[in-house]
Length: 104
Image (cartoon, rainbow, N blue to C red; front, side, top):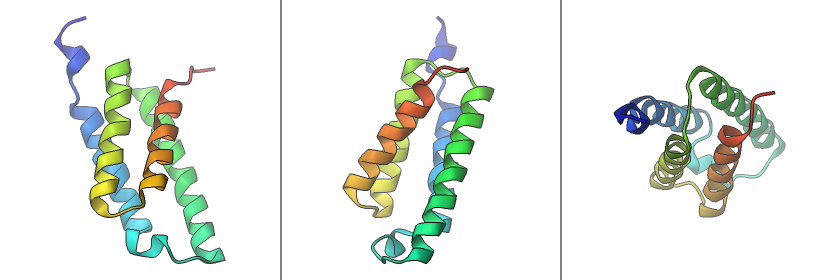
C-alpha cells in the first residue's frame, strides 16, 4: 500500500480548482437569484464540472480515501464560500458518486 496511498496533493489541488471554477462562474451571491439565465449558466457549469471530475478520475488512480477527501474538501470549501447547505450536500454526494463509478 505504501505512503502514496495517503498522498492528497493532487486531490487537494483539484478540489481547490473545482471550487474556484464554480465560485468564479457562479458566485454564492447569485445563487439565490432565480431566472432562466442563471439556470442555463448553472447547467453549463455543472456539465463542465462533471467532465472535469471524470477527466481527473481517468488520469489519477483514486483509492477510497482520496475519493472521500475530494468530496469533503469541495464540501467544506463551498460552505466557506457561502453556498447553501442543501446544495453543498447534493454536490458532495454527486462528486462521491462520480468518482466511485467504474470505467466502462
